[in-house]
Amino acid sequence: MPEKLLKEIGDFLMALADRKGRSLFLSSRDLKQWSEPLILALKQHQMLKKVTLPKQVTCSGCEEYCGGMDVYSQTKRSGEIVSFVICDKKDDTNRVILEGDELEWWEISLADVTHFLREKLF
Ligand SMILES: [Zn+2]
Image (cartoon, rainbow, N blue to C red):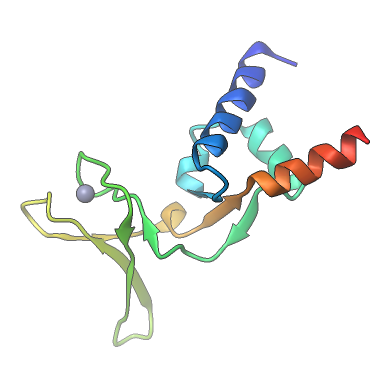
């Protein structure tokens, strides 16, 4: 296994440990910062599970990447649902629309990783 991948697995576990038992929620956009083989393997072994849009996300509309922003959804006249966060750090418009890979979310929990390891080890 390449050194880079091993380091990433370690980083991923650390990120999960930082959540202190709570699940880690990542958008498809967030997943792009990890190498593809790792993400594919996590999905394949059902550790990374697709979930609906969380109630809070990180804002990508300003330079600050404000965390824990409430997600609002509104149905347009056309029937299309628009989801957005309201960021007060932007001077033009405070509404940051979530688009494309920001609308697709994944969850990974320590319980799922533990379950996988237990199956493999014993
Ligand atoms: Zn922001």
